[in-house]
Image (cartoon, rainbow, N blue to C red; front, side, top):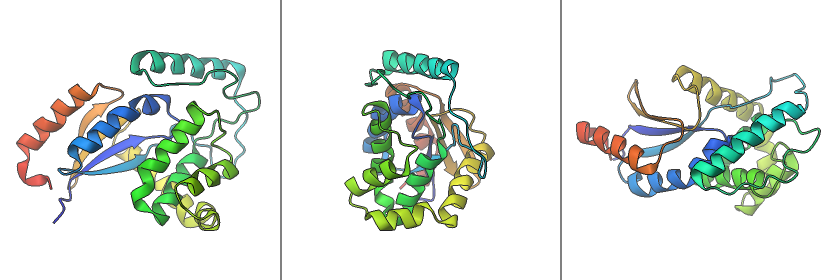
Length: 218
């Protein structure tokens, strides 16, 4: 019987620090999947407002974001493609990519993390506009999800509502930055990590929690 304890990964597919954290997340999954239920909560880094048009990013905002990308690459070693990234007119709205992950979750829950990473790779390395529905459909088809089924879910009111619930869940849990790791034990939320941390630090914190709560793991 699986434990009800959940290790929540709060992240956004268009969050550069989450991209830098990707290899560490994979180590966490490989190390603790047999002990904890690891799940993804989409935090909503920069979501557009439903029903409103999000304006294109300014040159200053683009410069600020690219500065962060360079910082992440330097600290984490993750690959970024800076040349011509986020071209003029780009609308930095993270809601479509997050909603796409929710759509995939409705169709094939075991593909959530694979699809999440495929969006990250497309955006940060391949310079694919992951705010574009056609590109999100293409990425879903690459992991074996039928295009028509994906689109039906992606445009459904149910998936739109669930996506907003993810964003609200992050705020209710007190998450203010990504990536964050939180262990939920019943109604208790215990922060393991806020922001980027090396695997060794996170592993030590998770091990301590498991040691204190041996009956709450799988």
